[in-house]
Picture: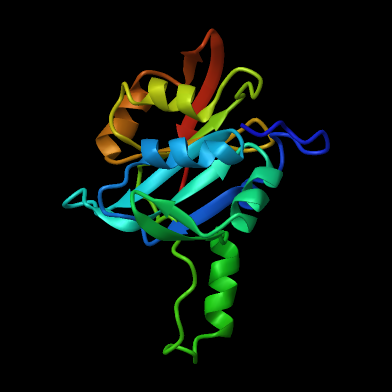
Length: 197
């Protein structure tokens, strides 16, 4: 594994550390993505997007690195072949930028569309997380905790020690909230509240 660059740390903005992966083999899962991309540096999250009804892969996903330098190195060292299939690797476009791009190029409907984004969560499925301890909590540890309430679709941690969790079903989010506003995760309290989409 690569050594961490001295000028870059975990608190770099997530949009610079998050990459879109297109053209995935339909059998590829998030664990295989993590195993592949750790050759470029620590990976904090991987996601394979799936159809809500069938749970079949939609053929694309995302990888989030701990360092910007790792994401840049992964882009530079393509092409990448995962499970026998060459995949497309690009920077993930934040939702607000995609909205602006769509407004500016609404007349170019015959051109290739922008990179896919995470689909908006179902109403009531997204919870805000506050008072995260970045030196203790990780995406994996938070996912492990919140999966006790139901299937977790997405976890994010921001540089400001906040974040969010997206459950697959509103019932899971409700169950989490019913547990209380304060959750003891790795001996540290995290404050949880409903977040509007």
